[in-house]
Length: 63
Image (cartoon, rainbow, N blue to C red; front, side, top):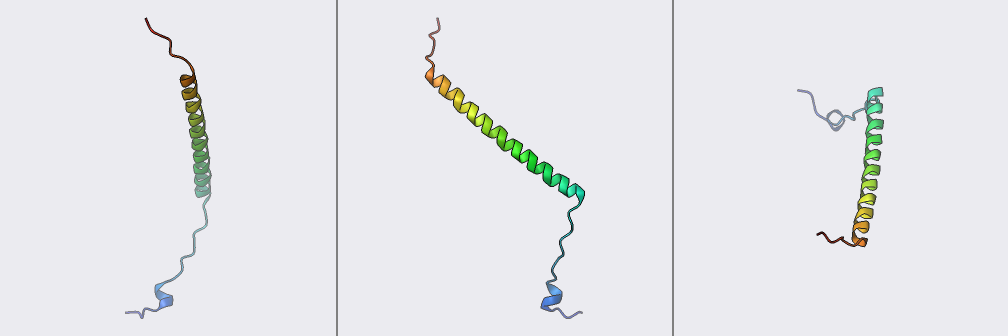
């Protein structure tokens, strides 16, 4: 059996280079996340505006 030493047991791993597909995936995920955040902010803003509008209008009596 080979003698285990600190240098032979814990070898540092060289990180793999980013492939073009990895780069594309990273960029697309970032864009999708940004679009999701923008959409959520817009929905929140519109929801607040709708609730304020509903609170400020008087309810019309129904017959």
